[in-house]
Image (tube, rainbow, N blue to C red; front, top):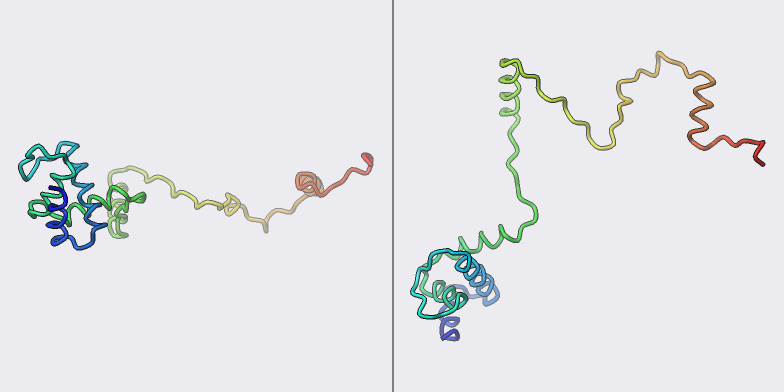
Length: 142
């Protein structure tokens, strides 16, 4: 029975490898409780899936999309457009809510806020920085 079913399916899905993937996806769906579109006739789920594909009672594009979704590791998320972000910020401002502070990118320091021109380092600060960097050697340890 399965050989005849496969030969019928090749007319619908010419690539045998793709046929196997689609039939396996449909068989898993049937095992999970999806309703059958053909009579079972005491056949196992893979044979029922092949018969459904051969008789065109299931949408092969839908099976393919489900298969791809199941194998994807990265799920694409729709990012809000700039206009939507502006609208949300205006709504928060009008309602009195304060938006969360923008997160810093990895590697950005908080040193952006320090104005180096107004302050001069003292000799103590330079010595401490040198000790922390490991550049200073203590002559008494030699």
